[in-house]
Image (cartoon, rainbow, N blue to C red; front, side, top):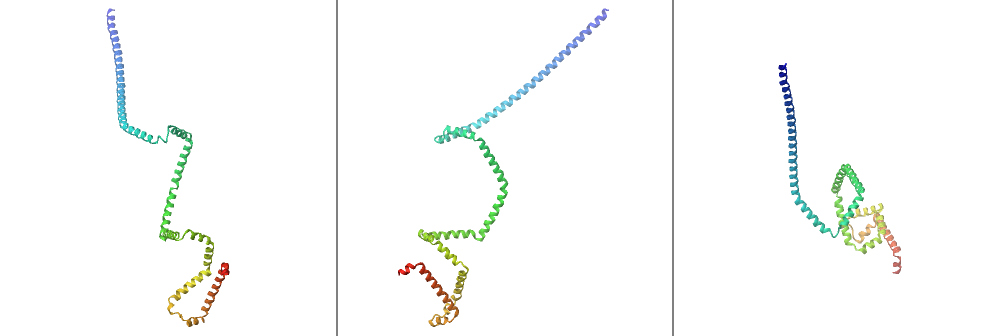
Length: 258
């Protein structure tokens, strides 16, 4: 009886000791996990501190690089403001800012219109290129045909007219422009053009034979037997008579006075 109790007592102690060891191992495992988690947090914090230091160094370097530029910009701004301070006041700038704020919608509409114009220009750009090419070709054809040379010479003619006539001459020309136009109209009639052409052609025909034509009195009288000569003289005398009558009608007072 006593032997059985003595055998069961060490077994109970061994079981209790194993439980304690298991609980201790569990605590050690939990402690190890906590230490590992703390190590990870420390590593994360270390990395964050390193990144923060790096960004701080970069910011310090950027600030050091921008500081001279900012100082120069500030100095230039001060100098420019000193030049315009007599013309622009702070109230003017504030008023302009308020006006811009009030016209924000108008500015937005203006930007929309500019964008629309840009889109329109993008659409018509190919057409303008074609038109420009055609214009270049047309101008080249005009140059080849001599239009520009004619315009240059016309400018020379106009310069000669301006330098050759005075204001009084131009005024007289204006007073008689109707008569001049009527005369030009009469001269451009087919009958007058044929007459001038016949006179020119006849002069060219006899100009080369001027030395062979009879110039004596009897020779001239002999030509009177020619019907064409007599008809030409009759036309000439009738024309002279008309001119004389027209002159008398135009200057009748002067003729009677004489």
